[in-house]
Image (cartoon, rainbow, N blue to C red; front, side, top):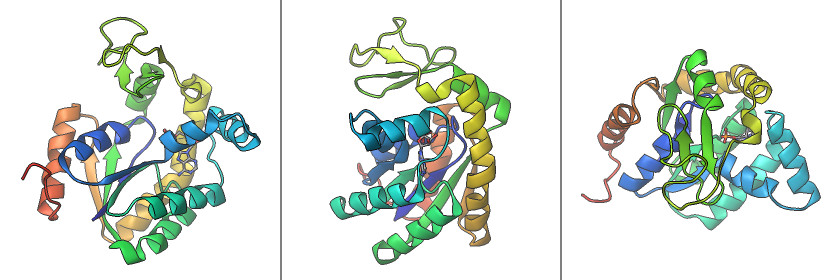
Length: 219
Ligand code: AMP
């Protein structure tokens, strides 16, 4: 069963995806993680991607299509998608790509008010080494600027400056909201209040995944 996690930047898609992966046997597609990896490369494409991301804009649908195809070729089995699709063309492309792989079973829509998102994003820091995510207000590391898990350096993402955050939220409103409506019309949206504790949100998601028949790893 393929699952999509959708929601604005800062809604907790990555955090919930990691919890889902601990309980269910799924591959993880994180568009942002893959693009951040590409952006680190010292190549024309790497530099282009880094520039687009730092501005809070979306990279091209054709690049994303190549990335999706490559991922699906390399990973057999069901997938939880985080950060893809972010526009209507991407949604249609993903539906087509998953046609012979069971289709899309569930779209989880994390709903969070904009002022909460801005607060979350401006206080978010990430480990350069293991990608662990902290929030300086609600989930601070024990030592400032150092990852609790691996001792790596913590940094603020280039696209989490106030200007880039504003742009990313506007892009979400304009390009990703229509994707939610698209799946909603098909009857496949599961709305979750994302303005609760990480655990409370996950309990709701976990119950839903079990209800639709996804098997727990430990069961
Ligand atoms: P995220 O970590 O999911 O918030 O993504 C970070 C950034 O990566 C976004 O602001 C975009 O610049 C880029 N990005 C992520 N997913 C996509 C996508 N599906 N299509 C185009 N660009 C994307």
